[in-house]
Image 1: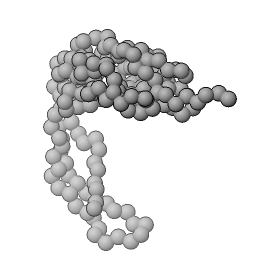
Image 2: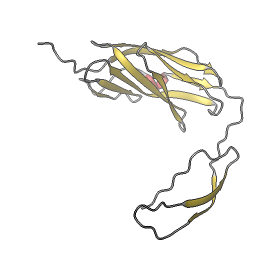
Image 3: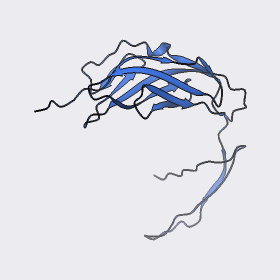
Image 4: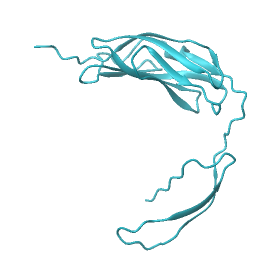
Length: 171
């Protein structure tokens, strides 16, 4: 019988190609990982302490990418987590965290990669919208509904760059 692969890819090393990026440029993160069935895909979480984003490697070629956009705040973005998944039937995966912890389909709960020193700088000369929309008013059209009726919620909100999404929750 064939042995079943139960182990996640092992991250050996990684590096960031450019130390300073501007909007329109692409972040490239090179990594080396080993696995019996090959790396299927992965991502790397970065944060500046406020915002988080992921550089993805959808084809397992050892290069994760992220397009720097014009609304990213200028600052230093540091690796928070690296996720890798293999190409086996069971899709074994591992999470490598900045604090040295490791989880997933792995034998150890720690790793010795220095993730906290892996970072890059965004230099964005564009003005960035950092203010949330302001809710001016909200009302419900009909307080009594029957099964199958639709609840309509009216609202007025303002924002200098427009409102992208509205979410109303009830409890």
